[in-house]
Structure formats: structure tokens, C-alpha cells
Length: 164
Image (tube, rainbow, N blue to C red; front, side, top):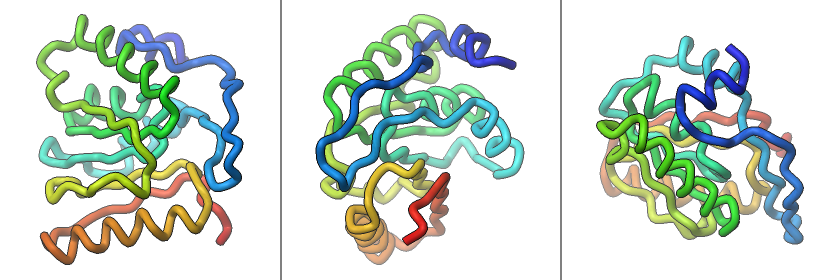
């Protein structure tokens, strides 16, 4: 399927060139994960409805809506940019119009990734090259601390990670 077909099914808008860049070198520009990559991931990883996926640098929420719809997972999007956070909220409203039953399993937080408090139910963490290794280390420490407090298996998914 092409992007427009997925966008129509999900009733969201995440396509188009992104022209917003971060001034801080620790944070990379937003780029949505392609639907082909999401489909490949869906077919190669056994997601369960009990999973909670945290997408760091979620932008407009494409991954969140995709996995909520196709894998019936809980999803949380973390986005530091207030414009993209608002776009994700708009997409949540339009998604809700078509997929009412699944909406309670999607949420978004407008904060820096390193400030996000990891919940004990969260077990899959997705990173699409969102920030520098220094920020990544802080986020990983938060995840490790959460797992030490509430032991559980977790999965880290890195797509285009920094070589460091």
C-alpha cells in the first residue's frame, strides 16, 4: 500500500516534507518512519495487545496510530516540539472519529525524551535517530532505572541509530 492509502485507513495526516529543524545539535529533525518499514517491523516482531510502545520523537504520531490499529498495542508518543505535538493531537482527534474503540490506548506527551518518566507498564521503546548519544544515554538510564524498580523484559528498537 502507498502512504495515502495508510493515511486514509488511519484517518491521519503525517506525510509531506518537514521544514522544522532544531537549533540544538542534540536533537535531530523529525522524519516519519515509512509505512513500509512499519509493516516490515509488524511482520517480523510479535507484538501483543499487552505491549506498550513508547516512540521517542514521535512527531505527528504515525507509528503510534499504525501499531495501535494493526497490533492493537498501547502506544505513547514523546515529542519535544510543540508544533508536532499539536499535529499528533489533531491526528488523534481524526483517528478517534474512525476508530473509537482503540483511542484510549494512545497518548502523547509534550516533553524532552530525557525528562519523560518511564511507566512500569512500558516494555517496547522505539528510536528513529531522534537525538544525540548524550541524550540517548540519559533516556536509557531512565529505562534501566524503571526496569530495576519493576523488573520486566523490554525491547529497544533502533532505526537508523547514531554510529556512537
